[in-house]
Length: 68
Image (tube, rainbow, N blue to C red):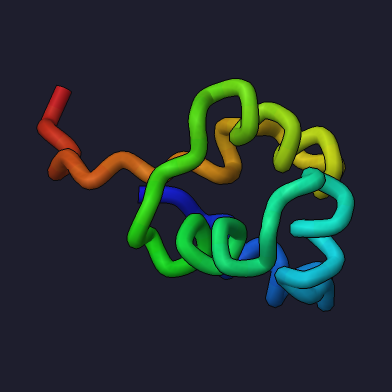
């Protein structure tokens, strides 16, 4: 699962702006934001760069934490 939509909202950035910066359609960015489609790794790295965050911030593990 990614956090693209959450990060966009935190930064006050519209999906249309991100779509323009990526050179992708609004519908594609919206699909990323709603987890209907996952971006390729290269695209995810580009999104992180555009949003000025570490790519790790866009990734959320859905595995339950195990006691160490």
